Length: 79
Image 1 (cartoon, rainbow, N blue to C red):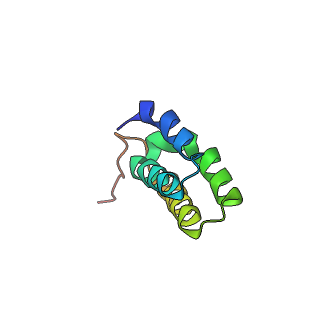
Image 2: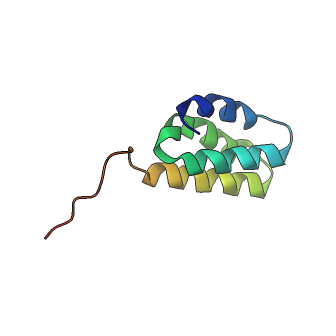
């Protein structure tokens, strides 16, 4: 799954069923850096949802995306 999947997953965040929203948030979080454009939608989910599970999944996704680095970027270690 890559960048082309982000927009459809953001649309699923608007689904009336909490299970779909929770799963979409989880997938976006697992996508990491490539899902960074979904961050505003995930923040909106946290602000608007009554379901704790959906809010938690969105927060977890935001945390994963925020900590992710672009692919190909590696940490340089001191010797």
